[in-house]
Length: 404
Image (cartoon, rainbow, N blue to C red):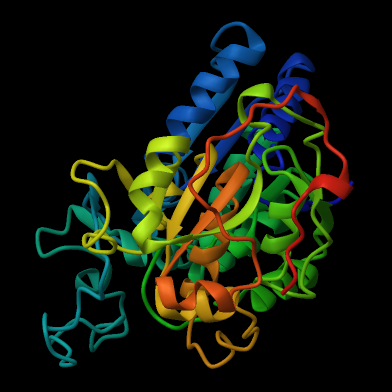
């Protein structure tokens, strides 16, 4: 049995799969660790575990990524680099060694001192008791090297299964950590994620792997067995088909597991265009969740006090109906320009569109300027009295197609 990489698409039920797999290990007498990046996901994993297992268990441990690095990989063996105890972390979105607002590096922040020893100011704050989060994976890799991979050996004795959730958000040195762990845990690691949903990154810098293909190739080089989870338990097939066009050719075709349309939404499902002048009426009739690229978009036509999420903050959520307010680049793509993302330096814009589209279960409405509505390849919505239909099995013949 080899270590595993699960490519879990939006709505695929990855959390459920992690938990059911974890419960099997626990019932067999083992211990499980789940490492994930966001605090929201940590809370969800713990609550969902109790729902499935019926109670909490000391054999099921959930940790944030930075806590895991510090508590399990660095601090137990930090004596090989620093004698003073590292108490906690200092969160860093940007490189702490560059003077804010400039490209100038601060003095005496290099990796090594003049005598060749490790420079504590490269990894730690001036008090030498806090580790920069953006350099924790690099520090963990150094500790592993100098201690002959002692942290990984220790971890293999404590846990029979270690999951890395939201693995798409890992970059650079994070993968060196996985490499060191895989040497001592050749069948205990399971990395789960969807590289189409990379919204956050764990650190700064340009160390590879950075792109989805680089990351997948890295796992292949480590001999991870790759598994696909293309079934979508959230979205109808029409929305799945649209989401598949955003990252063409890189992933298995998404197959909807939604077989019936509930009576409450059966009168309006599929993908639609909503003119800006119609937004208020559309919101009043269907009450969709509004998602927008930024907090400033839509102010000219959204009713006051409309509850909105940004594309990024909607990650992990799902709604029966969604109305999206996108930037011009997204509208060009949705209008048929499939090459609009090709020259982007990062995948951020493409990925955020994928996240927004896949939040919708039954209906996805796209806001466009009134004059541009006729050029979009989706049916327009007109403010007519909805007619409720009886709930019935969903058939492809009655789903609005996405011809882009």
